[in-house]
Amino acid sequence: MIVPIQHAGFGLPKYKKLILSIESKIESGELSIGDALPSINELRHAFDFSRDTILTGLNELKARGIIQAISGKGFYVSSSDVSVKQKIFVLFDELNAFKEDLYNAFLNHLPSNYQVDIFFHHFNRGIFSKLISDHAGQYSFYVVMPANFGQAEVDLSQLSANRVFVLDQTNKKLSEYPAVYQNFEKGIFESLLSVNDRLGRYSKLNFVFSDKRQPKSMLKGFKRFESVNNIKTDYLKSLDERQAAKGEAYLVLEDRDLILLIKSVKSQGLVLGQDVGVISYNDTMFKEILEGGITTISTDFKTMGVNLAAMILNKENLKLENPTHIIIRKSL
Image 1 (cartoon, rainbow, N blue to C red):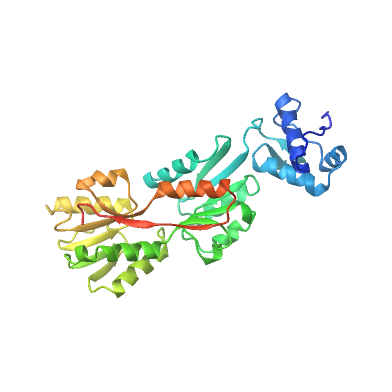
Image 2: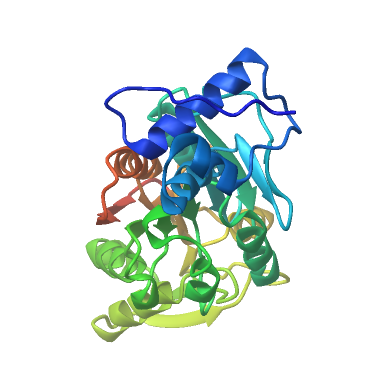
């Protein structure tokens, strides 16, 4: 039989007193993993608190992963680690070198008593929806990369709006959520414009773009550049089974296409940066040294992670545009 939880804490909000009492029971061993908490009515009588106050305290413990709710049965202890003060759900599209920089910067700027669980949807809308649905109400905060999914706001509506942070891509339908994002249209347009003289050395600029994975605003940025420039352009979905063409330049978004392009250049005895120009998207240390250096259009992913952590810690509802720059290297 569970002993009624006693009052605890002075000068605290009522729901905090409930939390402190339950934590003390867990720390003392009076409550163990799998044990049921007293019912909401029992807690109301023990503390003389309102139902809403009791639910506020229980929901915070649930969001930290300390307790879980089982439908029709009540609340049960699910973790004995009461040192976890905030539990954060992070949903990335994929993990690669630059997203790892973002993630590590984010972790390094959070307190040690914050727990971060990371998941990946791999640009699959079904997985995206299921992961959000399965974890609704279980975390203090939700950091989500919605990619270019239509109606992502429908999935996010299952979560408390003040607990959601949108990362990397956003749109008008997600405007209620704070965000740290890239302006892909502006980034493509201004970056290409800044190297207009270099692109003028080539007879054509090929844009390798697939709308299944990439932000559609990238395409808008490229079309804006196209509208103010006389260089001939073309659009390719991938570089599978295509040879690099001498005298042409390529804007490549996927690293797989970058490798295919370099292999094709080398197999034909062409020189990268002279016979064929290349601009890649998203900078990494590997691209700094690959073939003497690959020109990249990129945001600063470490800054993105730092800004995201600050927004969560300060509970700020901001829309922060992470700036994009072009880094010129030997490939252009």
